[in-house]
Amino acid sequence: RKEKEKVNKKLEELSEKLTAYRKKTALLLEKNIIKELKDLNMKNINFKVNIKHKENFSSEGRDDIEFLISTNIGSNLNSLQKVVSGGEASRIMLAFKKIMTDVDSIPTIIFDEIDTGISGKVSQMAGLKMKYISKNHQVICITHSPQVASFAKNHFLIEKKIKENNTFSTIKKLNNNERISEIARLLSGLNITEKSINNAKE
Image 1: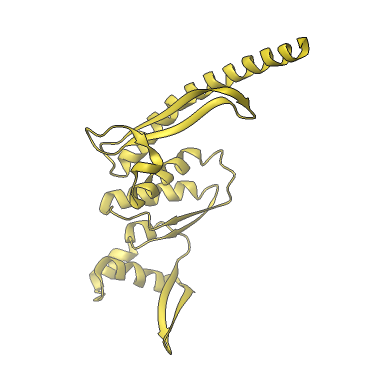
Image 2: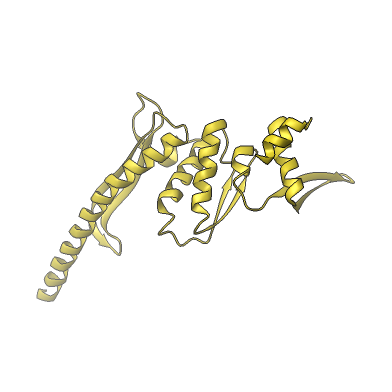
């Protein structure tokens, strides 16, 4: 019993230290996530890290942690997984990855149509954030945004083709001229003009 009490006391001390450290870090995370998301046109965002005390110890301390978010003025904070749409989820993940890029050990990060619901300057900000993440990770991004695509080192064109009542997806690595042509197509649609080619080169 004495040994158990001694161990229990030590666990209490370590858990309290961990909780204090988490609370301090949570404030920093909240501030940075809100800043990153405002860059990505989520202007009325509110983000909170909710840390609740658990009765029992675990290998991760005595905290239950939940991310809470509100995406509109007047909306209550709710669990992240209940509130966000697909496009918002992508941007929130991008914000997390941007903040964590220096310490995260995941080798490859895939962003699927992160440009949903954004355009222009916001798309450019998303592209810049992905470029920053790509310093330490391989980033694969599926996009229809010329602003996002223009930051990539390599481009692949994915197309669906129908042959004998079957659908096939093909993927092709693009050379420099093909890259310019595809960026121009994203900029101007079906009719690629000399102006859109020059814009794509830029």
